[in-house]
Image 1 (cartoon, one colour):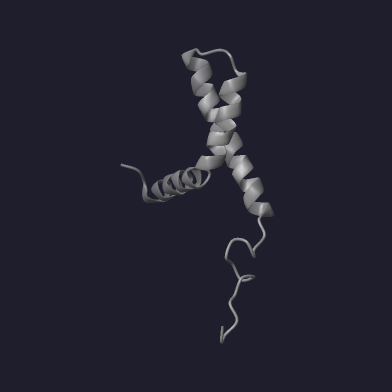
Image 2 (cartoon, rainbow, N blue to C red):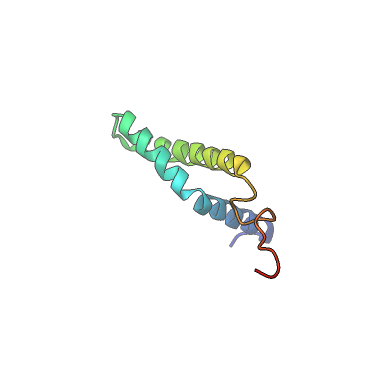
Length: 81
């Protein structure tokens, strides 16, 4: 259905949305608590806006995350322990 290149891009976008789901949820809590209009167009715009803002929030957090906290190279157990 999708071309192979676009299919991979679609999966990467879905993967990124999954990784950022908690941050998107946090942004949605604030957004829908502030926006009083409950119409369908505003709701759709809110979902799109909160997804983009949540992805941005996730990207900022990922960029600032310390390598030692993520289990990366900074967190090795010495041999013999």
